[in-house]
Length: 173
Image 1 (cartoon, rainbow, N blue to C red):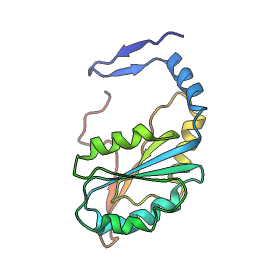
Image 2 (cartoon, rainbow, N blue to C red):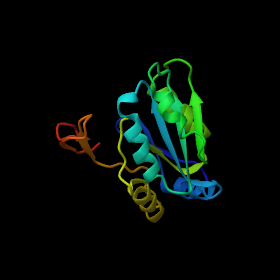
Image 3 (cartoon, helix red, strand yellow):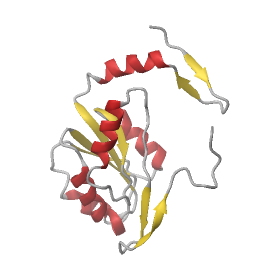
């Protein structure tokens, strides 16, 4: 098989269908179904609730990769109790290097067939990751999935739904 690429009108590149088949055969060698990346920086205000939801939602055949992006609050202390659990990986940037660096660092060591992002202020619903992985398994031509979000206050009060893409965003790209 040859690697062929097509360029879209916005300058990014997309892979043609024959490459998807190659990637699927490579993915079968992964040990885990899912790698969940959670980067944090001074997230102590919501981190405990976020962690509880993450561990409730994480499938058995997954790993969770945490990246401390230079937190100066008690985020690492909150996480400490979870670090002894199986399939939990901890990386420490030492200083704040920003979310892109932290996510890329975690993704570079990921062992899962799929990678999911769970931000430190997220609350994941119990079946989130199972539903997303099952969808990808059943739709081999799909490379990325996302979801809508419910916006809540720090006290857990419902503030509204977040629908993507937002209505004021250009679509059809």
